[in-house]
Length: 502
Image (cartoon, rainbow, N blue to C red; front, side, top):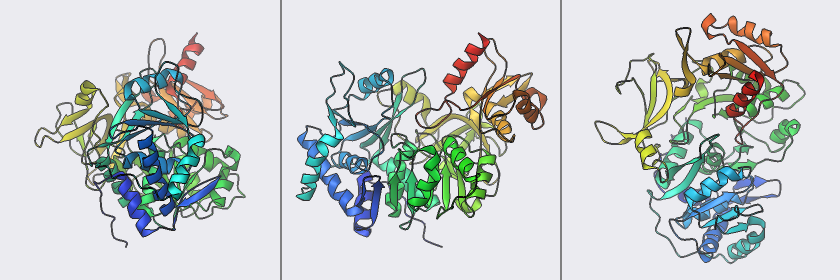
């Protein structure tokens, strides 16, 4: 068995420097327009740092990145970090309403885009990446290395803005040391390696996508960025690039498994799917295993505020259905009751995380930070109160049961939307499911994606759950509305329900 990779608490761009030393000619990143080795990425990142400094960016500044997935983003990110600045990646599809909020909160010194600038009146200078990249390549060709900047592990590497449907996005402060630790602890379990090809269709503005850069770098693997491939061409793209690792969210997993289920495809070299963002239905897990024999399907649970909470070790993929794994190496997961004390195994409570993966709070939001990041009463170290609920078994495996907003009582029975959705997804023909708790003017409702009749879905749920947990109504949609990161858009489903109720 290979030695467990060491856990890091240093600078994020130090991971690239180590990879460039170990694998200078190893292919680091590829997109439809070409590829770079680790040494080329390191040289380009130095050029980016020098270019940013010439543009007036200083240590501690924020640089907002609003671009599609492209290989230039990898050296740009590392160049920002070399300069001691913080990267603020956002999805290029973010609407002006939320973009104005992010700009006002982050106050970036510079905005780098694929085209178009900041909203009028924001005062943020914007540059188009394609227009400035030739200058960066010239600097890299000159082997220009900027004056060294003293960057510390506690300096901010990333501001990750969590998506909000009604409230303004909030920025999670991610220091270098904690980002490095989270990435290395994840890789200690997943084990990315130098012969891996990581196929990433997830946006790099989504922290799950962005961390693929760091995981690939830790393993010396190649990262393949893909955003333009049509859905029907997914399997061909995965096969053509020689993918061995494919990160997915449930909607992407359902798409891949559905295409694979039609037969006639080559499973290629895929050895591992990883999933987070929401629980992967057992039906999708089974379909992926059928379509890609021998591939592990790794369940994980995490939130941006600590990056990753638990991972089910790949070798245990067939064990403990419903579990999301164990705590990352070097971290602790606690289940606390309403009195703030740990509860016994099997008892539901709030999921609380302690360890170097716990990020540094919310940007310019001390009250919210104090509410979510609370000191351990014994050690004083910050603990993340996730607001999620679940239980641990006797062996420390976590079973996620839902967020506080997902938990509710109906007919005197306590339940979670998560278990209702899981039951719906177990009904053959259901591709996606989202339950809405009882609210103003409506009882418990389930939305599903598929071609079934509503009564077929309700009958299937009734066969799997107690009567109190069977929804009063079912609405079948041909396709679910999704967020920019591929998650179910519950706010839009709620609006659909309001329109239905009239």
